[in-house]
Length: 154
Image (tube, rainbow, N blue to C red; front, side):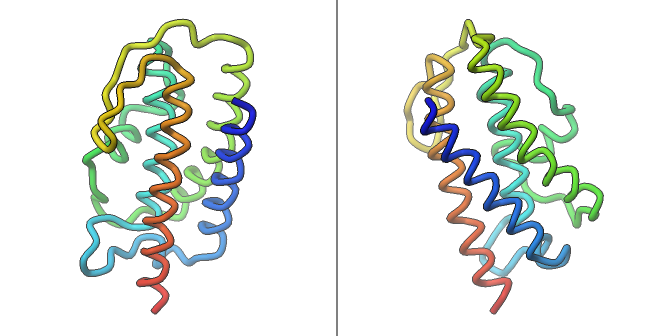
């Protein structure tokens, strides 16, 4: 799992840089032909990790229900978000992945409630499955963010 955590930490660093290198307006813009924006995709990966790792392990998530509902699967941006919320999302990029890595290494993930992911049809049966799926999921959303950046910046 060391490699998975290395890649996830690198991906989170890239997302953090994208936040820092773009304006609030660009992060919030939903271009024609898209149904979400850059910051929604970044917040969505934060929420997805928490749900797949903690909630499905029967553990308490560190995010509030409002954030989970706002950025969970099948949600869409509900409007422009503030710089304060962007800053919170940016901080969560680092803190949440570090917490999962620490908790994983401490062995707190003992049980797991099976979950079949809609994007691939694979069934997650243990924390290692979830973390490997998160690896793929964050890569998919990185691709979405790159596509959005290309359109937003043109």
